[in-house]
Length: 310
Image (cartoon, rainbow, N blue to C red):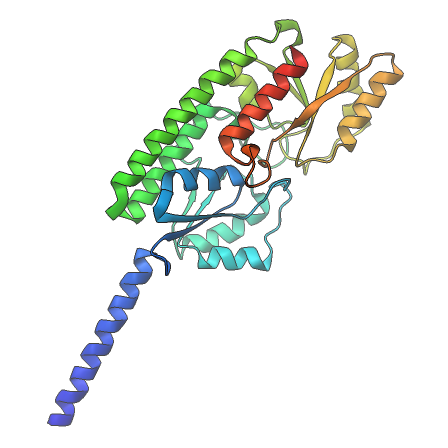
């Protein structure tokens, strides 16, 4: 009888310890008491850092200069995703080669597309590939405000004890985004209408053009995985020549070769086109720099575009 009671007591203690362990896993806290969040692109990791504040460890998989359209997850990335308590990604097929991974992760932990709450009616259509919509939503700052609200909502759902902190942090960050949105509008408006044309290597700036009133042209389609041919080069070259466009732009995450072919073609036709500067399209600048934040990246792009086209 005593052995039976002792056995039941040990079983009770073991079950209790197991439940405590399980509840700790559900709370999703690391040894330092913070939530480990892994994001795909730097722009999303930046939202998580601003909204999560002291309660979150934010890690981005894709660093400066990395093209998410062509990105393949490494074993190290898989480990980071496995060890994360939450995962945030862009969605809209931006991280096309990682879709299967996200589907598997969804069964294990919160795996959220930050674009999920943006109304489909305001999403731009895609001109190429398997894309139903243009995924580069961060170039309309208002859409990135929506993404910020989604991150705050999901963090609060996962960690309700700090909901008020997430709400406060999100409100402060959104105030900065609203200021940025106003800054972009004012600066682009200073470019003469006849030269308000943004030409880049791939079509990543559609939301930017629609939101702030600038014509956007890309040599490649929505994705850098799409092929461009000699006809694409000659068509864009002729447009630059016919409309006397003086500057085109390279992108930090896209090879310069394509756009340089257009510049050379225009030169052969007697029209000089310069590179107006390097823009950040699918990746931010180096970590620790101003351009390594979303706010700094957008300001850099706008200042570079305005300086070259004004």
